[in-house]
Length: 444
Image (cartoon, rainbow, N blue to C red):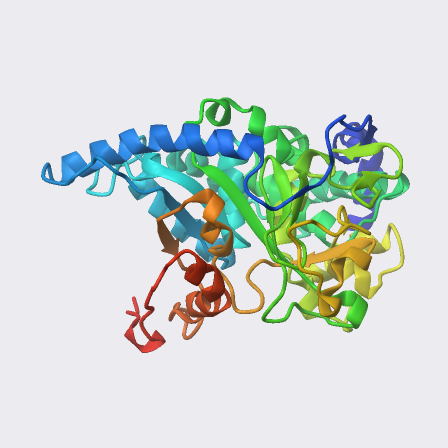
């Protein structure tokens, strides 16, 4: 019955096709790749402008807290929100509400305005994307105007009628993208379903791209911390199902996509993700609109690779979300293990950055596509790594860890793993940090 309803609604959903489908565009005259030898010009401009505004807010907060605090030299502060699905989204939202001068009146109020950077992965990327994609409203606004209704009318339940309408629109999206010659995987319907809950606007915010965030008023006025979303690369060409402990960390921002890791050490404009490239140049016309914000937040929370060789069986009548998503893809093409990953044309194909250290064991430049998964796999559930880069000059990181390490609570395992993996960078910056053992973390 539901399948028939979906089919009858596909034609009505046709207006959303062109909005989600990547488009061909004229390439920019500037280079499409750059070595990771610092921030981009846009990134540095934002950092400097935002830091000046954040300093004034931090100065005000310090003076309010204790007039004896010195405010002559102030650190750049960043906030991270970990993975953890809805648990992390909601817990992280509570933290931000308690820091936001627009939305609370407690001892920590005003510290959100003092942030220079804000990073999220998986469930944390849902929170960050819902804020950034909606032009940074308050948490109270998101809760009352968007989340309360969309979380209640869960699109993860295929039996829900409004969900059925959304499923029809999502099938139209995926069909359109596939017909235009672009790879579609389980991440496409997954990201679109999440968008209906997290983004406002027609058809679940389908017109919102990550690069379009840079044109929103809160961003252009430098009144919000710079957003960073992370994901991990999986070496599928070697038969690996999941990223290992040294997996490449990729970051998405409104300006750029890429990695600081030595075996990539390159960035490309986010706006032109999806472009077929070789040797740092487009092989034809450029692609735009591939950076759909739902697809990116779906990438950061993509755990389908955990199934690996056990590909979900397609069945639209099932109440199991994985199976229903598999049915959507099965309507487009035969399911394979490639559908378990978020697929991106590799902008670094046949390209070695001047700042990279080639690694034959992780030969990313030889791959035509990148296969990305949840940023919290490989026991690194907090998006700390991008904030350790010297170019960002971050001195204080507020880590909101909502991991489920043991018995529903975080115990520091994720933070410690990142600490170990990032130690060489911290040494270069002269850091001598000490992390307590997991046994010292409080529960509750």
